[in-house]
Amino acid sequence: MGVFWSRGYHATALPDLLRATKLSRGSLYAAFGDKHSLFLRALDRYVADAVTRMNVELDPRREPVDGLRAYLAGYVERTSGANGRRGCLLVATAMELAGRDAEVDRRIGSFFKAMEAKLADALSRAKAAGKLADGVEPSSAARILVCFLWGLRVVAKTAPTRITSQAAVDALLDRFIR
Amino acid sequence: MGVFWSRGYHATALPDLLRATKLSRGSLYAAFGDKHSLFLRALDRYVADAVTRMNVELDPRREPVDGLRAYLAGYVERTSGANGRRGCLLVATAMELAGRDAEVDRRIGSFFKAMEAKLADALSRAKAAGKLADGVEPSSAARILVCFLWGLRVVAKTAPTRITSQAAVDALLDRFIR
DNA sequence: GGAATTCAAGACCATTTGGTCTATATATCG
DNA sequence: CGATATATAGACCAAATGGTCTTGAATTCC
Image (cartoon, rainbow over all chains, first blue to last red; front, side):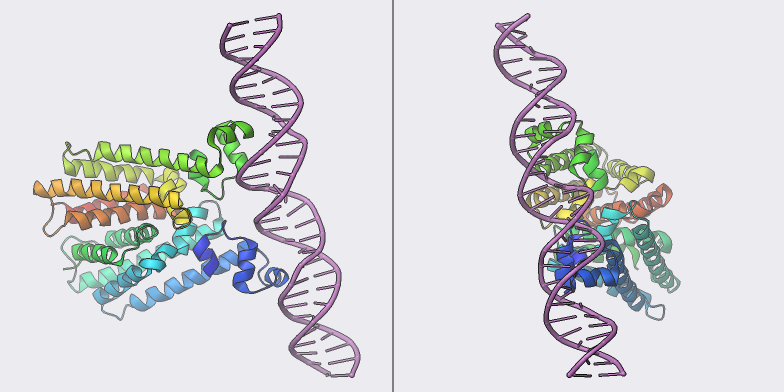
């Protein structure tokens, strides 16, 4: 996963994969069959990790505003310094392969939907608790957050400075939370 | 430019470029010297276009809120349908090449700074005119907008639906503008 | 200990990559 | 027209691509 993550699909060559998996050419093809299949496996793992994080931090039993804050804090962490410069396999894949690879499309699309739904859910629980600012609608706020967070990952490729990311996150949340 | 735009750097092969430029192999190398140099030229043109748009719509002599609305409307347009699916050369390049290509880094970084500055400027003019909601700080709002817009371009690769983009833009602006 | 299985190393393959060069045609210009 | 410059098509190149196959060494199992 790591090597696709740091280089992207096209830029990752077989030798990179051999080095990363410590497998021989033969074994790699026996185990995964294909560069493309291997990539899909990597993507699946990456998505699964992201989903896990989401489920933990945006857990319905948790206080929603805390959860939101924690979830966003994770993004700040992952967009700072070396983490930030490394980028995000999902965003990179979306830009590189979306619309040209149906398998990829499905994965990206479904994660994106899940993320938006989880955020909307947390926001609407927050709203029910009277924690949202007036006029904030959970569903559109969720979509704004999704865009914002993915954009953060893009910006972080060239400017991964924690303090400004943190400030932006705080300022945005300030607009939503009472 | 178009071919890099729709496919990305690595995925664009010489034959694609020949077809796109209608040049022969020899002439292409005589004129541009390099795939990499040609790519940089394309990127420069793309950036120049983006800067021009920015300067028109966020022109200091223009009413700032209108300018902001117009500028964001342009993004909605460019992230809808086929336009959206095509993606954004800047975002794609950031994800694909940033941190591995100094020339690219410089261009992306400087455009990003310029965009943030222009937005911050428009926002602070809006603030001076009393058009901003309480507690909105132009500089952090500008950064939020940058992230949001770039994220929109990512999301639009798989879900380029105009109405939801428009709704998200409106909802976000609603949080900033009185 | 010997047979069977697994796996690593790397030779090998066709294709494609970015890039150069030559021969030929087409303009340009005096 | 004839000479010169220009640009074309495409042969050609070395290197790298994704992918297969053979060989030989470990390991496993009986």
